[in-house]
Length: 202
Image (cartoon, rainbow, N blue to C red; front, side):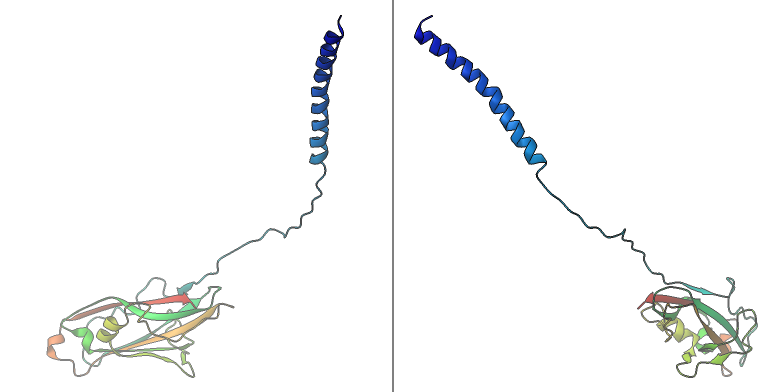
C-alpha cells in the first residue's frame, strides 16, 4: 500500500473515531448541566375565601298583619311583628310597601303609624312593647302615602343597622285608624298593602 493510501485510510479512521468521541463529550456536558441547578421553595398553607351573609326573618308565619273588615269611621287596631337579622355582615334595614291598591280612595283615609322598639310578638300581640329611647318613629301618615312613596329599598324607611356580630331582633308596632271624618264615598272601599323589610350590607 502506498504512503498516500495509508494516509487517507488513517485520516478516515481518525474521522470516524472523532464523531463518537464528540457525541460522548456532548452527552457528558448535557448530563452534567441537568444536575447543576440548586433550588429552594417556600409556601403558605391552603388559602380560603368565604362570603358573608345578610339575612332577615320575621315571626308572622306567613300571615298578614291585618285582615280588617266592616270598618267604620274611627275604627283602629294595632299589631306587632318581630324582625330578626342573623347575617354576618353589618347592614342597613329599610321598610317599604308592595302591591298598593285601593278602591273608593279608602287608603287615603287610613292613618298608619309604625314604631320600632322591643318587646311584643306577632302571636302575642304588643303586650310589653317598648319604643326605642330614640329613633323609634318609622312612619306616621296615610296608608296611601306610604304605599306611593316608600316603594323600594332606595325610598324605604327606618334607621335599624344590625352589626352582624350577633343575631339582632327589632319589633315593629303598626297602628291603623280609619279617619273619623272619612266621607260617605269610602263606604265599601278597600285598601291593600304589603310590608317588606330589606337589608343591604353597609
